[in-house]
Length: 229
Ligand code: CDP
Image (cartoon, protein in one colour):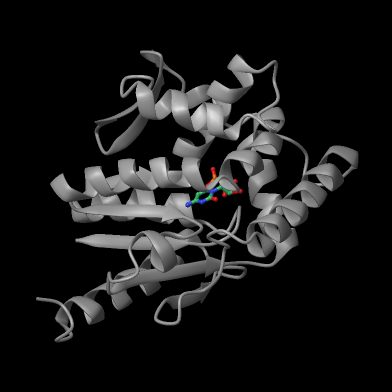
């Protein structure tokens, strides 16, 4: 079973995906963390800048299966780079600004998708990302698209990053979220968009418990429909 959850930053997808994984006793694949690990490798190898080095990064990953690896512990995904745990290094702003180069690279995307598909062959999974329901698993019947107003999403991200929900730093965060949305939606390859058959949930005014109730309701409905064998 594959559950796809797509949506922009701060829409609540990773929180929902983690809770679903626990609830259904399946694994959670954080596809953004895989893109971020490619980015970290690029930044470490090319003086902090991945731009123009995307093919070299893809080649290094393709030629060395141990360079980037993924393990699971208590339904948590752990990212490894060169046999070192890097999950905690992936969410800094400097890196977030560089991910777009990797996300724009067809060769890097292919490698990320291959990793995701391989895990999904062995386990039932819930995967969050931007293109999971449209490109990576277009045939899964379980597809959700979470969204929320940009200001609400920026406030949630401010809480995650432990910064104030107003003022200069917050304005910078809001701007970077809006820029990243535009970039993810406008790019030619695997843009962020709502799959025709996805359940669309606006989480702006919902608590996480309410979002979970909506998602689990749809999950049961889809499971019982004759589309799933
Ligand atoms: O957690 P947040 O929504 O801020 O980002 P993320 O899921 O960690 O993803 C970081 C970036 O990776 C996104 O802005 C996308 O550019 C890219 N990404 C993608 O292109 N496709 C995916 N399936 C997942 C992430």
